[in-house]
Length: 377
Image 1 (tube, rainbow, N blue to C red):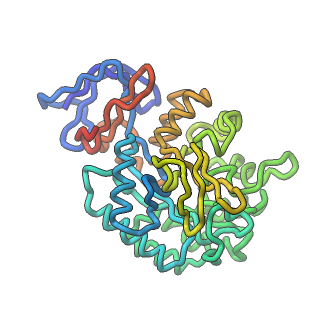
Image 2: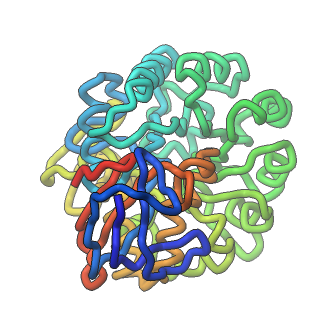
Image 3: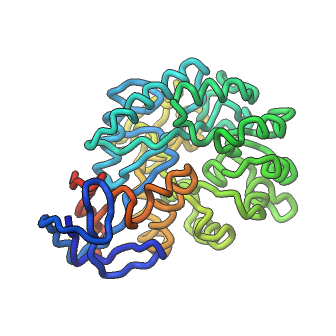
């Protein structure tokens, strides 16, 4: 297949007018295939990769059913999110293992008609009650390396990231040392201060779940987790860019503070995404959706988002006035790198999996989606 006429987002994070060649399921340097696609007037970008979201269309991955995974992953693909690493809620350990096992089954099938499941991002259960947000505190437990091994086994090795609140877990450094070579440790739903965060990073933690949300804010005398993460060059941070969770000025300044390569844009979308305004369940708690805003009916805490990652990309560019190149990288190669999938996913390069999205160059509306070399939209 030969795609011609598009402005292509290249590996140096610049757009250039060039031809794209696909053979079987890979990008290649050239191809003798007679099939051609005229993409004049389009931007060609890698398929988006969401490494932190929960659901859509009335389903949540933690429903733990084949139907839930199928419907959610189908929705994601149709919106230009070609690969996914869904987040799990804080639930009972056995229930989480069942969720992971069902995900492994879906991943093993390698279906062409749904987004590819590349891994899991577990927010709980080793988090803080004080910063639980919309997580169910009934199931919060102390960190345990043995339980992590159970999660890894249930997922068939698909577990990529698991959360931790250091201040709630005495001996957290020893725990990190035991599991850091098996799974990436993120600081999540935590009230830890600057020094505790630094200790966790020095032990081997290297990721932050939805920066600013479910953690203490950054203060000029108490920089907290945000300041510690910004200070630590190898730590990457997730950022929800739905226009609800974080003010546009904070988004822009966070990219300046961390650098564009360390920020991973996520949607944190829940089951209300793609659905009308109503009440929905999130881990046994009632959530009210009003437009793009989702809040717990009790307490009013923000409870995930109702925007998919493509909508977040558009919000970041159109409403937050972020550079398109920066935003595309933060939704493609940066998340791929965060979960160790960047050798095969995240950019339009020779030898990589041919996942790609075409956007109208004027209004950025979705014009085409390619998954593993096949056009699916």
